[in-house]
Image (cartoon, rainbow, N blue to C red; front, top):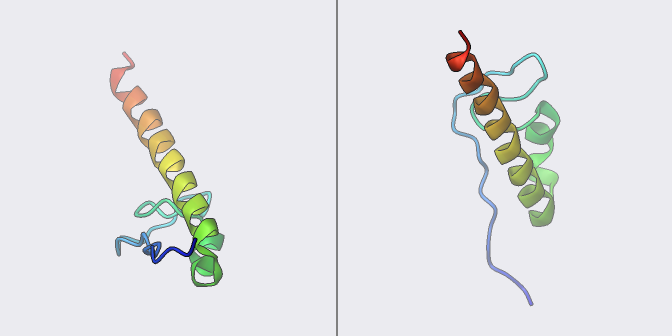
Length: 69
């Protein structure tokens, strides 16, 4: 079955790389950003899932510091 679904670029125009070369705006790695346009939709979907995990991990670590005494 052919799908007309297009995976949109997750860029939020807030590009700033952290020390692991991960964008703090969209949570893609530098390699993922550079390779986005040559990825298949399946690869893009996988990238977006990894971005969600990175974002959650980042906020989980950040929020833990709020509760330390």
